[in-house]
Image (cartoon, rainbow, N blue to C red; front, side, top):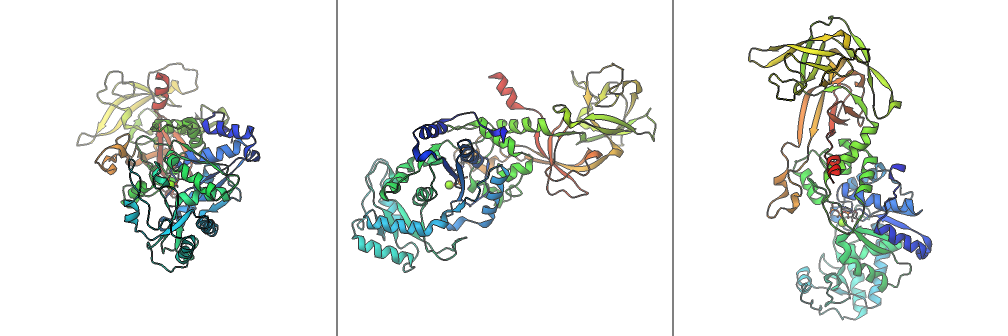
Length: 559
Ligand code: ATP
Ligand code: MG
């Protein structure tokens, strides 16, 4: 995986190197990626995946995949499967270390019993409303529950009954006994277990009490021998609680939580809940709609794992929240596909040309370069004949200044072929342009000795050597940079109504009639395209991954 072998350092790597120098954790580095299986992974998760697995790789460590499935209501096997597929596809391997937080329910229960025995947790019948009301505020301390100092034996008895299903949902909770006047609200006797009769996707109906995330996470980390628990900044304020559980249980070899800034990307959103809204309300065709920032959406769009890993390297890791320009992600895929993608002649908005001085039954083989960036990809034959298609945009009846392509009386070069001259514009009865009549100059065949040049070069396909296909042009899903940051407005108001444009009269060079789902091409002069999985043998659909215009390279040049 050398495209990802990372020489950029960052503050997390510095901490790890320091720990290694001090032989902390006996020189072990063990990270984990802990998704909650309540949605598909997105590009923000890719940042966390590359960070965790990248660190394990670079420091001879290990990285676990752990499903954080402590909240049984929102979780689904479909999500588990998609997460496994996406992490693998990104190129990472957890070996035999795929775990579920629910595997630890019994141990977590026993830890809770221990906390109670140590006088560090108590059972409280207060309602959620009461607990909330007594939490206090940032400026006011909370109020201690009247049950806070109930005897240990009483809490033990009640907690066991909670587990045994003796009580109704929501009637009791187990709380950590910390400090109701702590300036950190998370330390004000947080709830660590609640009663909830929901069937869990793995443990079924075995449990009717479920642990809270803040309790389950540090202990799951400890159980797995995690050394560095990397998470996003919103957990910074939870860190004292993370440490408190490990300390209260007097556990040795404690993991250390380190927070980093999450990825925010312009013109998109990065919240699973809101992405689900787009899916459920039909704004997109599914989680893998090529406009979605999900890993499966990007894959269907034509992104490669390498491009996403390179993107993750480029954005780096920091402690400061920021909004990353989506142009950088687009730059990463262009950079990758430019090196690898097969070049193809394709016309998306066809205008027919008849080359009137070219014999009717003649077909010529011409040579085209497969990838000018990589000579080892060689050349191929393309076919030229009397009737061809060019792009409608490459012709103007009334050309503006500096228009060097086709217009009446002008000459252009057909890429890999001849110079042609536009002589006549043929229109239908309604005045629409039907076709152009041109002549070619037989002396100007590409590669011949003739050195005559013209200013414009355009792409084309021979009508009888191309096949018809559908092309889907994607644009950014939102019209504004940060749709979630606009006050009092729903983010869905900012969906770009032109984010998908379907063209179904497109013509692709017949050499690629057997293109398979996932195959990636550069259509000459147009952009990068990828075969959609909904294609069939006889009907191909191409998704535009990205156009050729690299706005990021321009930004980089300016700075
Ligand atoms: P969402 O807000 O989309 O629901 P989440 O944080 O709830 O995301 P999890 O499944 O809990 O989703 O995330 C798994 C891991 O991925 C966590 O460690 C989380 O910190 C990290 N992560 C989630 N979103 C991002 C992001 N935008 N950038 C970087 N890391 C992220
Ligand atoms: Mg989360």
